[in-house]
Figure 1 (cartoon, helix red, strand yellow):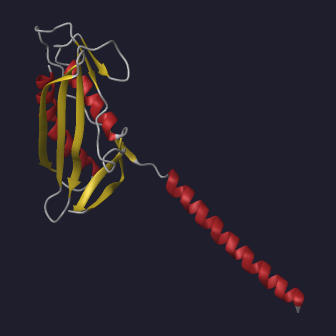
Figure 2 (cartoon, rainbow, N blue to C red):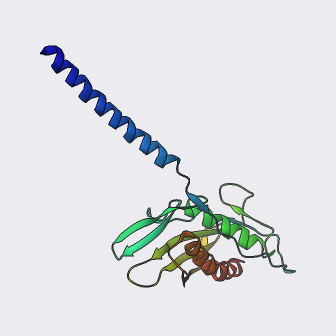
Length: 201
């Protein structure tokens, strides 16, 4: 009788171990599932004959925790956020925006040097940025991408503010598919980045 009970217990433990192994394997498979990665492009370079020797360093933008990630944020309601499944940015969004600003401003040819604040020469100017909104709104209407970024230009030697401005726009996506959502963000940036680059120089 004791042998029978022991055999039953071993069978139960074996089944539990098998289920646990299946669960772990499922988690590993989910972790190994590739996520489509999307990048955004800067404003096209514009030849300019009015360049200067000034240097400008662009700080990594500040952003709320929900945005400061490599996931594409979705707002299904006023008080709720989630993320687009199976899609992400090429890097954390603040780093992506910093790179876009650096390349867009450098492309104007109006500065002697433009780079990220993490390295480079002692700057004449510093550009601070804050991402207030970079999300997809799906709350009961068309799928709409919204971007809101504030810039502040400083004189580096005395940290005095030269000017500040908010840049914002929105665009309707063709669908809620990642490629269409990213295309809507790119359409917004195609308008905002040239404006930002001109403003900063």
